[in-house]
Length: 92
Image (cartoon, rainbow, N blue to C red):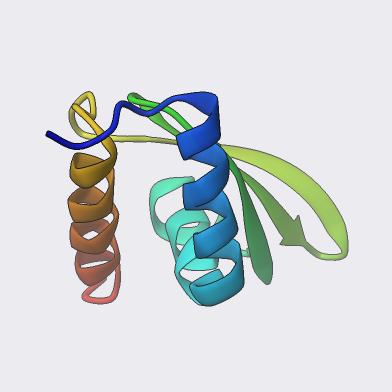
């Protein structure tokens, strides 16, 4: 069984996403966070219901909340959900 999404797991996921998938985070904000003008973004936290992103829009840092289409069960579900969301966002 995978790990529950605790604050420590949230930090680990955010660190990985911010270091290795910055473009994906901006795309999450653009497509799912109703912030199409997002230039870049940082994932601040993730929980079972969604993720909190700090989007850079026209030089200003704007908080964006992206809700998931289902409550995440655990860290493995978060991984699969984030991958599915980016694949879908790239087709929009």
